[in-house]
Length: 314
Length: 265
Image 1 (tube, rainbow over the protein chains, first blue to last red):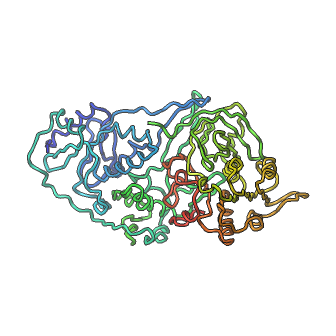
Image 2: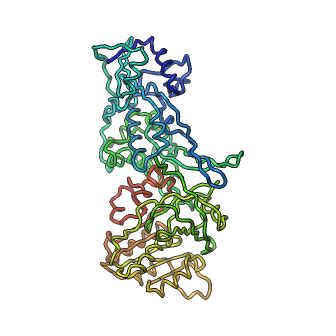
Image 3: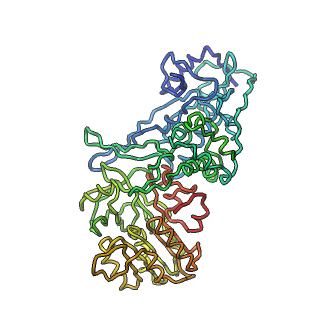
C-alpha cells in the first residue's frame, strides 16, 4: 500500500497529463461529468457518482468508423491515442468490465477495444453512495479492473496498484510513499436495495404505463451500447462518413424494418426489453448482470420509474 | 484484429428485372462460404447499408431485392459494372443437415422466396433428397419473382403451388392468401421439414395451419425479419426475447421461438 497527501494531487495530475489526454470528473451547472483536464479544474471526487459515466470516451455518442470515396474505397477513421481516466468509481469499473465482455465477444469490436487498450484507469473508491445507488445489492461495490486505486482518507489517499501500469505510476511519479498501514475508512451502504426476481414476476404493465419512452435511461446508462450505423455524405471532397451513433430501445424506430413495420412499439414491451437485456439475457450469456446499480437511470427518469423496485417485483 | 463492420467492394456482374419492384443482382463472390438462409450487409456507396438475404448457393452470390427502403431504392439506380459493398455471410440459416433424406415443404410470401431459393437448388443436386413442395403467394401475377424459373423447376420435379391476392381478368391460377393453397397442397407428413419466410402475419397463420394438420413444432422453421444494422450481434436492434436474430437466427425452429419471453411473430 502507498499514500499520497491531498495537496500533492495537482502535481500527480500534472504528471499524468504528460502521458496522454487526461480525463477527470468535474462539476458544472450542478451536473457532474468527465472532461478533458485543464489546469485549475476543480475535481469532483467524493460523494456519490458522477451524473454522467465515462462511457462516451470508449463508445462515443457519435464516432466516424470510416471515410470512403465515391469508388467505395474505405479508410479507417479512428486515430488511437493514449488516455488516462482519473476518478472513475467502482460501479463504472464494473460497467467497463461488462462492456469489455460484450465487445470482446466474437466477432470483437476493434473500435471500442482499441480505445480501451489505450486507456489507463485510475479509480477512486466510493465511500458515500448517491441517493439512487444500489450497486452493493448487485455485488458491484468492490473495484475491479483498475490500474491504480485511490482510497480517500481525510488528509490523504491510500493508493494500490491493480496492474503493472499502475505499479509503474506509483514508482515513477515520485509522489507516493510506502506505508504498512491499511485504510480505516468505512463504506456507507447504499440506501436502495434490489433483489432481482424472475422476469415473469416483474410488473411490466404497471411500470410500462408510467414510461414516456424518452430514452433518458439508455443515454445515461454506462452499459447501454446499442447503436446505429449511418452514412453521411460530406459536402466537401466527395467523401462519405460511415458513422456510429448511440441508439435507444425506447424509440419506435429501433425495431422498425423497411416498409415501416415496428416490432416493438408498446412502452411496457420496450421497458421489458431494456430490463431483461440488463438482467436475465445478459446473465445467461456472460454470467453477470449488465446493470451495475449505479442508479443513473432512476435519477434521469422523467416518469420516476425506479429500476431497483421494478426488478424486485414491486 | 479483423474489423467486422468493414465491407468488401464487389462488382455487379448482372442485373435482372424480376417484377416492377424486385430485381436480382449477381455480384462478385468474395466472401467466405455461405449456406442457404444466411444474409449479407449490402452497402450502396454514399447511401448506407441494409441486410439482404442471399438467394443463391455458394459460390454464386445472388441477391434478389425488393425496392422498399433508402438503400434498396439507390441500389435500383445502379447498373451492371457498378460497385457495391458487402460483408458477411451472417446468421444461422436453414437446417440443411436435418433436411437430408427428408421431404421439404417451403412456404413463402412476397420477397420471402429468395432466401428459400438456394434450398431448392441444393435439393436438385442431391439425388437422395426427398420431395420438395413450394407454396408461394404474391400480391398479383406481375409481382411474382422468378416466374420463368418456377416453371422450369416444376418440370424438374419440384411441386410448385402459387397464389395471388388479386389478379387481372383472364388469370387462370389461384387467388387467395397462401394458406388457401397450403390447405390443398400439404398433407401431414412426419418425414417433412417445413420452412417459411414472409410477412409475420402470414407465418403466424401458416404455422397454425401446419400444426392443425398434425405437424409438430419441431418440424417447422421460420426465418425472421428484423432491423439489423451490424449483422454480428452488437448493434442490438434485432434483439428479441434474448436472442440476436442476426446471429442466433434469422432461422428459428417454432418450438424455440415459443419458449422465448417475447412474442416473435
